[in-house]
Image (cartoon, rainbow, N blue to C red):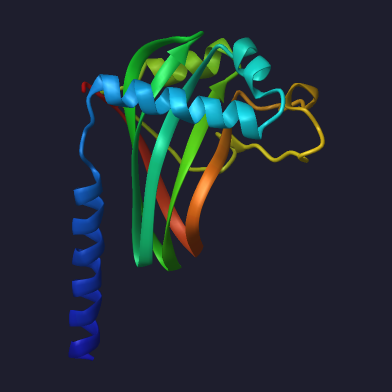
Length: 184
């Protein structure tokens, strides 16, 4: 029993240190460059995505989210909040999870704010932090590859698109996610 507790503590510390090591703040120029590359991939992979984002109030592009887990896990990424084609601020996404999970992956995410209310709620962060549980506050977009995105009607104020995934992660976990404004 004592060995099991020590092993659990060791695994928890290992994941915590690996998540902290992922959390290096890039320069604004690097984040913008990576966000532009991610948007080019997004436009290429998802038909109608460019037109969809043109009609959004704003969108947050997080080009490189790294996620690892072995019973205890975490993820981290940095991105740019854009209104039109102009970057207004930079944010990081941090998440910790616990449960049955194993693997590692890297992916990109775009969160489109389709209403003024959702954008204002995000911009008026208390202490520059915004927490969410993916329990309906952000809809994860799903679409058929044959349909164009501008033909799809998402009834939510915030819609997340996950794309350009590499690696594999299987999980059944409890997770908390935090977005935090950063100053690169």
